Amino acid sequence: MSQPLSATRSLRVAYAGTPAFAATALEAIAAAGWTPVLVLTQPDRPAGRGLRVQPSPVKQLALAQGWPLAQPRGLRLDGRFAEDAAAAQAALQAARADVLVVAAYGLILPRWVLQLPRLGCLNIHASLLPRWRGAAPIQRAIEAGDRQTGITIMQMDEGLDTGPIVCAEALPIEPHDTAGALHDRLAALGARLIVQVLQQAEVAALPATPQPRDGVTYAAKVDKAEARLDFTQPAQVLARRVRAFDPVPGAWAWLDGAPLKVWAAHAEPAAAGTAAPGTVLAVDDAGVRVATGEGVLVVTELQRAGGRRLPVATFVRGTPLHPGQSLQAPA
Image (cartoon, rainbow, N blue to C red; front, side, top):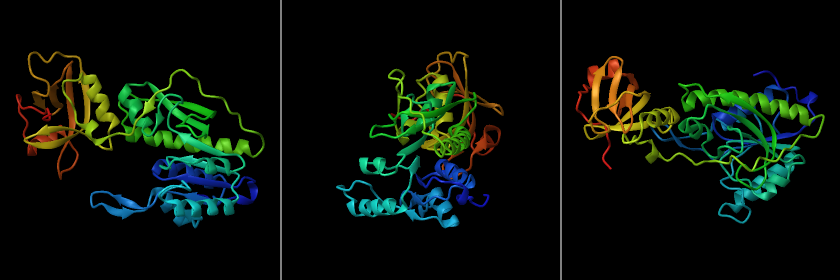
């Protein structure tokens, strides 16, 4: 990252974010010349296979650059973590931020936060609002079969992603996009757009267009239970779910009494005959063909518990699959 050029920038920018998506934009903001006056991120939490307590990507970046950092457990001054909230309020007041940029922070911002910066709070949201308000817009867009998504920079209000739109830019969803691949492209787009918005804010008032009333959808947080593949559903639906839940939580089926992760699959319109949904129809190096409620799901990458993600040609050498076996998980 290039050295900050804070002397050339008039805005005092604070930042709130937690995962890699947020770290990408924060790094771009700093590279463009704004040294964050305060960074807010979630408390350290267990992560990874060993569930070791780890700092968030945003915290790691802030520590590496020596930026002021706060990790409140909550921001409600009358809530369970009121002491944390009061400390965060004091830190934000001391930072004298003109604007608070927010990206996948993970805590609801109460009114006192929204009103504190002179220019309010700008959110980097990974959808074309008002479609896919909420926690999992990337996954839900792929799952629904959307052909495009995008980034919206929004002036935050007290609603759930309901604030007026400052700017937005569309991004196509490619036929084989996983949530991970789309995440990375959206993170880069969000970083570029927020830099443009901050540059504009330094010289003029930002536009704020109310969101349309029509076309509102909600992107609920992904529950691990959703990742179980129900082969009574159409193959097209299952293939989209496999892509939507890669890398987290990972779609899964059932084999020999244990979960089997399904990392890559595509749908074919071929009829499955009289085979029950979830029945393996054929196995070769090109994939495992599985009967569904409509069409055939061709699975091309699998992983057993404790193993590695493997292409089918490699997987079946260690774990044979046979026509007639069922991958349908018990209800």
